Amino acid sequence: MHNYRTLAVIGGGASGLMAAAKAAEEALSRHLNITIDVYEANDRVGKKILVTGNGRCNLSNAVISVEDYFGDTDLFEEVYPVFDRSDSLSFFRSCGLCTCSDDAGRIYPSSKKSASVLDALMYECERTGVRMHTETRIERIQKTEDGYLLNGKFHADLVILAVGGKAGAAKQHTDAVFSFLKDAGVRIAPMYPALTAFSITDFPKSVKGVRAAGRLALQANGNPLASSEGEVQYTEYGISGIAAMQLSSYVEVKDIRSGNVYIAIDSLPDLQYNELRSHFEDLKKSRPDMPVAVFMTGLLPKGLSLAFMKEAGVEERTFLRNMTRQQEGVLLACCKAKKYRVNGLRGFENAQVMRGGIAASELTEKLELKKLPGVFACGEMLNINGDCGGYNLQWAWSSGAVAGKNCIGEIG
Ligand SMILES: Cc1cc2nc3c(=O)[nH]c(=O)nc-3n(C[C@H](O)[C@H](O)[C@H](O)COP(=O)(O)OP(=O)(O)OC[C@H]3O[C@@H](n4cnc5c(N)ncnc54)[C@H](O)[C@@H]3O)c2cc1C
Image (cartoon, rainbow, N blue to C red):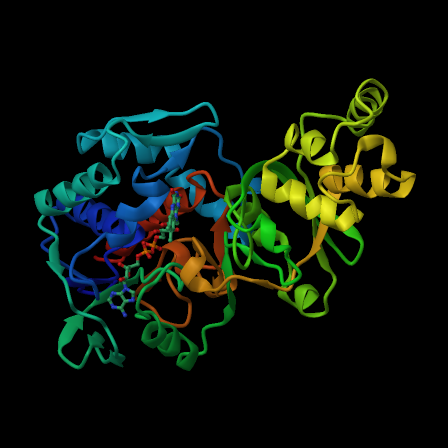
């Protein structure tokens, strides 16, 4: 056991604030006199928390299992049960924050305001004496004989790294910390954007700006990978919206590069193909002079209708009775399974999270780095990322609490 007295938390985001609060609570309960400093590059802590869940902060989910996570999920299975959803909600309740959930199990603050979550964390940090240093980007970490030196001036006996990932970042603050880890020989799994949109080049102009229901099926090398359903946002670069973003975690970048990844969109998920076909045949019989545009806009937004008619090679005013069998087939197939080739994932600036990060093999179950004694890590910078639905913040709470509590456990 060492005689530690100062803890530096690098990064005042979700996981860093939770880590600082839990470390402080543990130190108080053990009557240890420890200084806890949070160093945050931005002009205030918790900026990203404020934009989560469209400003409402989807902070957890009613149903959480390892299936909701990607990357080194073994580590998730070790860490999550130590401080799980119900521990997180109890923690927030003890700071005055009540929560509620929607039909899909997504948990939000009762106020539906992300600022309430940040306020609760700030209250707890203030109550327990955690010190905040904003506009303090840590650019240099050096190992010394008795701990670590940050930016050549801040001494720390213990360090918690909580710098998050590269996703959604306006500025790039994390590079110096990942360089420090790489220099120390810590293995970092390749980092890519996740929960991000898909770029598609051969996109018909008319669909841009359309928002429509859809069931999406992702395929790579001819094999189904995953599917999702929800609002599809057709943008100037490709496909976005939660349903699309969820699929981005399943795809391998190398498959995209070799041109083998496709998304098929069923734009009429509530109608079976046979039902659609009978609807078409009925109208063709009862209203043979109906223009195909009228038939299509009765089903879909105009932008999609125009794109599909173009693909089928029919004019808007073509009567149903004048369509060829082939045109009918292409048109109805587009409605039920229009296939687009994916040519890229949108970058970190559009992503909600990062895939990759510190490999689980580099960490003990206490989240201490094996090659850097006294340095702990938590949150998105670890090689674990979750689906949309509160899973990423839940990982930030769980891993932050475990790192915070355990690092104080190092103190004799
Ligand atoms: C638009 C958007 C919406 C999202 N919505 C949701 C949602 O509703 N539910 C959900 O579960 N997840 C959501 N996420 C994901 C979630 O916000 C993250 O997974 C979570 O914030 C990760 O927590 P973290 O502490 O690891 O990193 P962060 O919250 O990113 O915090 C890291 C902090 O470290 C600071 N920092 C970085 N480098 C340095 C340095 N060198 N020195 C000092 N400080 C540094 C950063 O400025 C930042 O404040 C969303 C993400 C985005 C971008």
